[in-house]
Length: 224
Length: 223
Image (cartoon, rainbow over all chains, first blue to last red; front, side):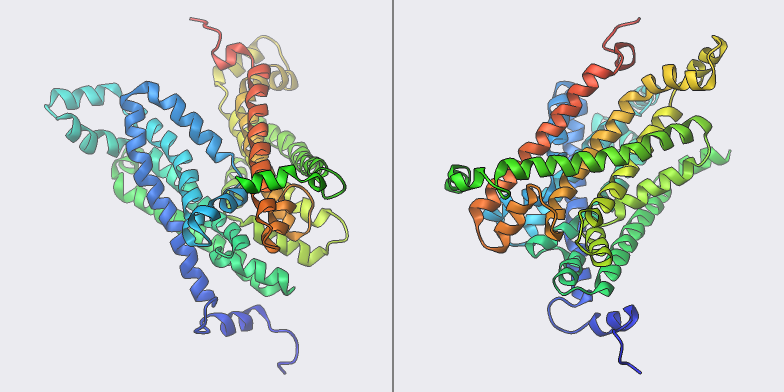
């Protein structure tokens, strides 16, 4: 009774863990690495740049302008131009995605710190907080919701953008799309799209959860 | 750098259906077509939903969901479903992906207009349509243009990727060059696409300067 083309479930079962390179499990792992590294690296790099832009206002315009331009560059040609530097490796995909992430996160950090009410900042000073302690204990927590909103955008778009890397052979689950195109066959395309969207939704959900845990006062205030 | 010389110096790259001018025109054609169709759907819909306030949640959710959709997967899916007899199997996903940014920003732009401003317009005797056209749209214009710009960025990038599924345009130099290990073509094509994207970005920045009312953009000091 197994004469027709395999159903999606049969195809998934057969290709989930073949033990060879390119099984779905393998691609999923690659995909996670290639999307998580830019998200984390983007945040780690955007924080100091955002802080510097708040401390020295003149820095913000040129930084934001530069990253606005970078954000407008299509990913595929950027991957291609990077190949001569970093080769056909995951790094070639990770570097541009990190820059796209910074383009979203730097303004988020600046806006987040800008959302700290002046009287709160002054109270902290009056209570004897040193500038560093004020930043860590007062300003950054208040900025968290805005930064996390940016991080949600970054997480979802990084996860879907990784698949373009398939065109240089480094696309995580995106490899399912190129494989399905070369050897016309629908199940891999559907599985790829579903898994990528599911990953994005999970990442988004985790960040919403993180926001609830990190900023309990937001909900408390709404409830009262 | 010799790759760039090889690519741009080769007279064969400057003529015929596979030449730079033709590919550039194709890229422009597909991008403009997709953006125009998307704007025709998204702007009226965004204005309507923003003005009436109904269906806002659907707009926001669809915008978030569309960001998660992998462009390459969507392109391959449509081509496998509809074949490659015409350009439409590729244009449809291009349009689908560029609707949400315009829609959500138009909606947010109209929603975000100060209610006092809206009430003042009604108080002056303007009707619903007039309030929308003379007050809400001009005030929301920066966000509407932002939506168009984000969409244009997306369309230029996706048109490049769409060369993989057989669409013409500048992406051909990159995709074909990569497949045949012709790196002069890959690098030359990539540089062309980057320049194209920068010109589009610049165009939208200028359009914003020209069309947004000085009172709205605060270039005019009122206080």
